[in-house]
Length: 230
Image 1: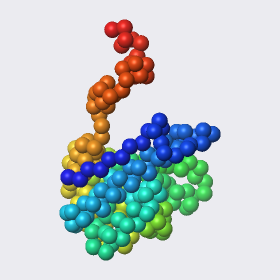
Image 2: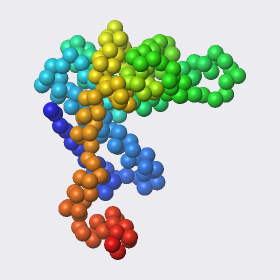
Image 3: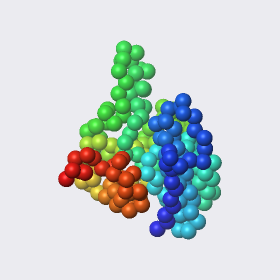
Image 4: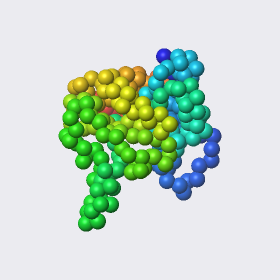
């Protein structure tokens, strides 16, 4: 397997940050940039090393276009040139494509419903809905998308693919369906395995802090008064 790491801490930065800016927004944006860049770089390296038929990315493809633009263009170009199918699997759907379309057709609708709400329990196990490019907000960014019920859970997942590879949509939906345990939350098993392997658990983080932080600093910020008394 391929591994790549990077580090960001508000206490250690090479840039001078504006204290008037929203610190939470800055931290979230830098986190997204680093994570997206790492994922794209690993995908590029995996192509060089393994020459895969397809690559499954954890999440929608559009975020790489936002947070890792230059590297993303490189990855996209390589996949298109070498015929490697690039797929993004989305666990937490945040779009409102169906709801927006319904609202356009019925002006009396005031509330906008999210796709995950409208599709909850509506698809049969293994059923897929392809989103027409003309209503897909990601279409002008170069992606085609589907919704898929890939497990027995009543919720659906989303799937993105490059618009130049849209002819492989059904094939990749079948792949995602095949790789997903029926009693899972709808995510291909390999994505769950990778997610578990790369995340630092709370126990590991606690052990690292206890070992490498100054004891006074650790107790001041991470040990409650109740634990100190016990």
